[in-house]
Amino acid sequence: MSVAFTREEDLEATAADLADRPISPYPNLVTPEGLAAIEAELASARAAYTAAQVQGSIESDRTAMARATRDLRYWSARRASAQLVEPSEDDGAVRFGGSVSIEREDGRAQTWRIVGEDEADPAAGSVSHVSPLARAVMGKRVGDEVTVAGQSAEIVAVG
Image (tube, rainbow, N blue to C red):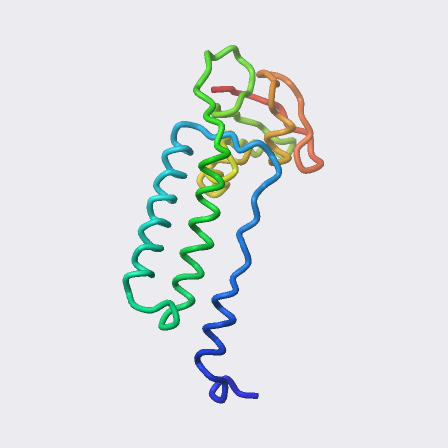
């Protein structure tokens, strides 16, 4: 059947049944910047929820209300479970909140900052503490060899 022949309220009802965003089973470790980002997302979710309520009856825009409610539940749970990890004294070992530079066998050098799951952005150079890369390098020091994605790499800097 063509979309042109479906009733708009049927589409809204389907959209209103949004599944919850999955919550990680791992500890919700966050850097100070990560905690600030979670709080900003929570404030944004609260504002979206309020806006969805104010815009009229729930029936008129069930999708916006469902999305706002889902995001509010997610960010409330993430804020409630957040475990702030303050920067610690640099002892030369890779740690949460710190950075690590590796050199792969093929000569590629990469630098990553190890952060919480919600603040991880590999394209911007940050990875989650539960990622395979972070797990491979945590606690290691300059000169240590690690296996990352099935390849050998050497830790060349820790910050």
